[in-house]
Image 1 (cartoon, helix red, strand yellow):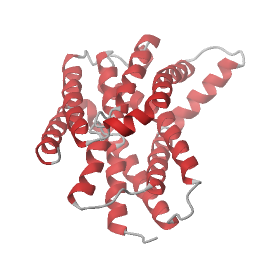
Image 2: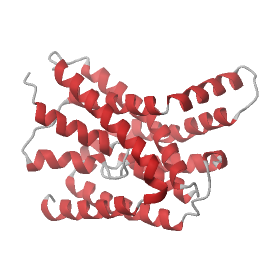
Image 3: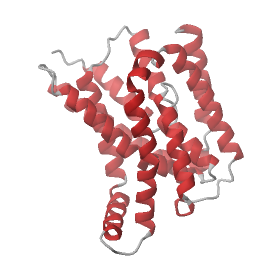
Length: 266
């Protein structure tokens, strides 16, 4: 199987950026196939970029994850609850809705909703919803003020990410802002919440990948490294600038992208 360096680099960069920025990976991944005539990147490539972005977010939050896991384990064996264990249980609560609905609705989403029209409309509408959330939120709450009700609201909102064009990070940040978390805390919770979701998706892809006979391991390894590096830098700079920058630039970008998709690809 041929290793296309330019194609692999381009698609890995797109995945690394759009996995965590609130701009929708679906909206971007349909553009290369339409504009450049590229075929679907294939299952093996999907596994590579998912593992790359998963490695990036785990590496970035490794200290937080260690404290969360150890806090939950201590509480589970009879210790006292801590801020870290509380956050761990809230992340688990927020993950359950999309796991359940995603399992039940996967075939419907793949067969019915994965088209340019749905992606374009979702890109615009959920971008505008993010703008509303950012402007109406008090932007005052931290992760320590997050309640189980707010975590459940964010988890239920994550179900909407099953609609292509919504953006998983975008909709969870939107819900967190509506729950009055500040921009950085909304983003941090969204990134932490991505870990079980990306891990679950990668596991399902790996199970499917085992049935394939031919895999370009060089391309997989390269794409994984590129996606990991880009995603790590994306998380770092996003968290460094989001309180100052706000979400408006991402909203404008989404609206413009959605209009382009509607005008030229629907």
